[in-house]
Length: 160
Image (cartoon, rainbow, N blue to C red; front, side, top):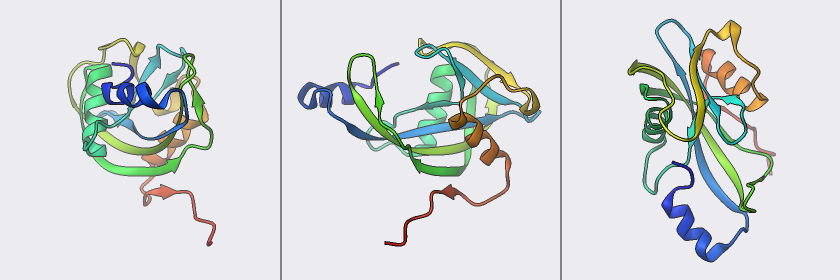
């Protein structure tokens, strides 16, 4: 899908200035414990699935929608894994700048066949946890936290 229409409308008046936006990432597991990954069209990297919520959309709904839109896999969000303000702004090739507050959801696959379902992915595949392709720390950390039976992870405050 690319840039949502509501972001395009904001950009029409905001230009390329930094926008602080919510983002939702999904770690999708199947019944065999494999992780669903997509190879991103913009970077060529394998990663977990994610996107920007539509206005008023709940994070679980965003995770489920994005997974289906990008991979044709139906999933159900089970829990919030972590919440993290990503440390550095992203500058896109067109000059737009964004910084994201990521909410990562652990999801369970409930149907569909994994395939490229939109222009955001070059490939889509299931991977055993012990045989993951090369991943950036962003995805590795979220997969690790999803597999642990711990409370939601968050960066501790500074006590200020």
